[in-house]
Amino acid sequence: MTDLHVVDATAEHVDEIVGVIHHAFANRRTLDPPSTALTENATTVGEAVAAYGGLLARIGGAPAGAMLFHVNGDVLELRRVSVNPRFQGRGVASAMVGCAEEAARARGLARVRLVARVELPETVEFWGRRGYSIVAREGQNLIHAKAMPLERVVPTADEMRSLAEELAGQLRAGDVLVLSGDLGAGKTTFTQGLGAGLKVRGDITSPTFVISRVHPSLVGGPALVHVDAYRLGGIAELDDLDLDASLDDAVTVVEWGHGLAESLAPDRLELTITRGDDDVDESRSLRIAPAGPRWAAVGVRLTATAEVN
Image 1 (tube, rainbow, N blue to C red):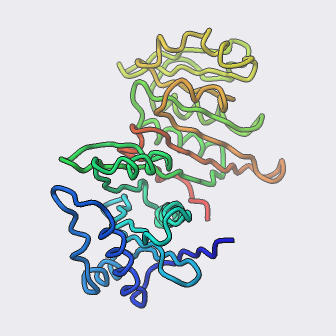
Image 2: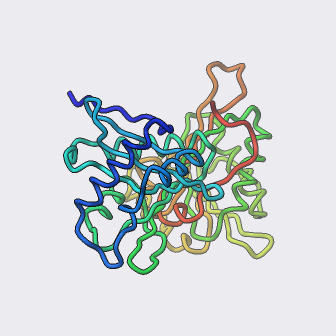
């Protein structure tokens, strides 16, 4: 078994981090313009660790990987992501990325971002497998980003509507939301809040018996298309609804859509609502998992309700 441990970087780890960075970047082929990683030293790394933190990975007690953090607004930027060549192929980079994402969520940051060089296709492929999207290009630098999931405890139905109304302010035509949760969890309540935020016409109720309803905008914005996939037999029946005709012009919410609606759009919000432990508990847990370049570029921000500990 691999004895792999990842720890939060402190001042006592600076020399080990510098060593990993130098070993990793010295082993890479020369780029034009060249990387400045080999100019890192105990002073620059120590300042970075003191200001924003970082990670050190060890295998069998030996320094195997490292990365430095930088915080820019609500974004955690990953710098000098390094694996000692001696330990490549041991899952070091993946372990550090997972820990970095946990750090971003713990700090309440909306996104994780990093730079990968276009001349290093293996590196670009690695970040793609980890769910990162290319959101910009600056010369030879490809800017990768990933939006972090949000988790909230929502005490009441009214607060669920308020939260959804706040989210509606970040939506635009073409956005797709896939909404999952048990019967009575609050999916329709959430959609009612979206409708209020989008200022659409008509009462929003469960579309179970009509499968799909269109609520036009009252203010010239996107319509809200409300779909219930509970009785659909599969992707073919979802296709029969011809949602493609309205996807670009509307905000589409698909209840019971997990496993079906993901094919509608690479850019989407996957929302899961979970009921409390008993019938007396009105609170709900809401998880919002953004997917795709659209959300990687901007992230999701919510101020309403308390964050899950």
